[in-house]
Image (cartoon, rainbow, N blue to C red; front, side):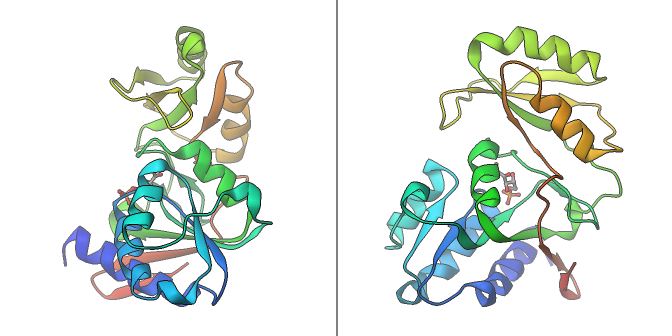
Length: 217
Ligand code: 5RP
């Protein structure tokens, strides 16, 4: 089974967590794109979707799914998104697609966060995938120096501006033994908008695509 087959498989499995007549949170990335395509087939069953990026908003609209502002909903019942790395404790690195800040907001505002990954993304310790950090442009150099102090090798993601008008620094070489602690510490650096560790609000359920089928963690 290819990685895309596994992504399709978890996207299909996620449909069973979509509640009738609800507004659901929808994330960003290639796995979620498969999910949006499948959601289109049952679009009459949902009231709409709050997307975590302009890219997902455009795809939802193309599929005829109403796009709803988070400010016009209360908390959402369910948020469905992918991840770049995941542990068995459902802690994540996200932001490979640059949408980490809105992803963290929609996850925070949702009662249940269901995360879709293929088995290549499971790790014992987070950090093999470079950690995305969204920064205010004028703070780029300062934040980079602080990330070096924390033991990382920061690299500016060239040519990328986030939906919020900011930059992304990818931090290489981290071994994240205490994800909750590092998440909080990086967020304290002046100029950081958000970092891609999801430990304080981890996923509630991981759906893992494997050759043998979908595993629930
Ligand atoms: C976007 C994300 C994505 O969930 C993450 O990058 C996984 O993407 P894909 O499903 O394409 O592998 O965090 O910011």
